Length: 460
Image (cartoon, rainbow, N blue to C red):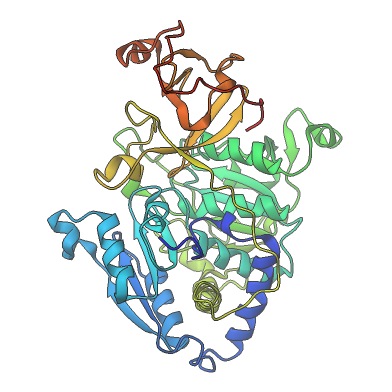
């Protein structure tokens, strides 16, 4: 893989100044979508869609054509060599060889886009990987807020519906937190934000989740526990929070999502009356000026009586996906230069030293792709030792960690554990697993020719 290639796997791959500068270019493109056919002339985009899509695929292909480029479409990878057992890695190797200059990938497994970047000779754009992230939809959503409200910082954005499985929500909530927006989560009961998303919001973005008082949201908040995510610190919250939680006085945008039933397990069941938006539910004073957004497709979660309501922008939202994706394509193809500083992305991923894959997620690409993928992790902290899957971002559930050189295992909170080199770390669910791999709590003699484990600082 060419290390100099720029990919878009996560919304974190772009700095906030870059995002705002992309918005300006998208606004310029939107003035006349037909005026930019010289930008990508002679270049080809490949759409590799292992999952169904209408808006994302068509908007990317429309964007590439409007930039003057060409498009190769594999809209249903079940009809491709994937049905014959070809791995994602091999497909990416072939397509990025000489077929295309950029790949737009959608896949059912979390982390698929990250894996694709490891084998691609051209830029890869994540068009949705399982329930993980959907960064270009997030850019589209942020762009719509920026157009409609003129800013993102300080806005009150309500996220409603299936927050557990919606990859759009996960990317969106990270970006809103980075911009300093205030987020009100109104989940369908049982479909709250995943714990790893909330944990990341707290640890990386300083967002503090507190209970919300949704009384002024009316019927929408009666069937669920609302949560307020704010960049403010707890001591500041205490100044205006009572026993019921922080009161939601005003909402600038309502972002509704459909039930992501294609990702449900046998344990997931929708309540008898799923949450839905209508003119009646949006009649409260706190919601009266809120724009209504939806990534589409919708089912019954937005009543058709809202389609002509001036607050509803979901069809505008879809249309604006074209100019923002034109800007994304131009940037990654090297045809658009940004003056804003690039994001500093931590790509220090370490292979799992030995033993079975510790990732707990059964739909992670590190588990669903049997070949050409090595389980890897990102070290999150040294005390206690904590690691996250490099592909799906879920925390590795390990109480004990071992050193592959010494054959000794320790509790992850111990001082000895934080001395282990990241590339020598082994994660264990329990002590029985450590013993099965030959690890003990007593140091073994270091084999001849192998340097002893060096002492390391406590920092990551």
